[in-house]
Length: 205
Image 1 (cartoon, rainbow, N blue to C red):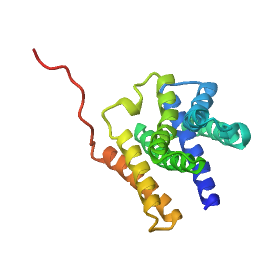
Image 2: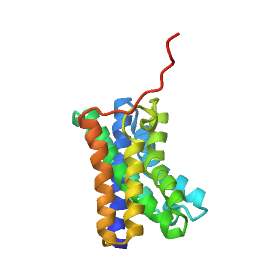
Image 3: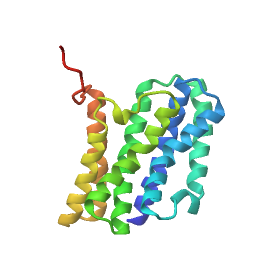
């Protein structure tokens, strides 16, 4: 199980780094800017989580996470220079990273020994905070704050993981897979059919 989660984490790092480079490409940033966005997108959420938990920050203990993010950033930078990459691909890459890191973040908080409520909150943070930093640095309104179904997908994934884990009817590997799948499915469905949340508006006077 630990090995499976580790591979999920590496995939999430690479995918989120790729989404950071795509955001940099649409803003016409240079290589340095692209690598910065790749790194903050992929490790930002986990960094914030570990600081709050007062545990060693994961990429300080294991620097290969940072190397994966950086190398993915460099390779992706040159890749998108020669390929026309639609903005939609950024959204899909971000959805995959969101699903993976939300579940892994929730899992890590539960392993540390915190309650289900704290695990859900920090799980959502793990999956979304890197994207928030990416969007702020690239001059966009963060996806988390837009009308799109984003935080809702993350919250649903964490809740399913915690609920199924507490019931204990299914193998933990299957619980993790279900939580990742549900989070990703909700986010991709929202993208496919333009499903959005209600928007705050000032009333007419």
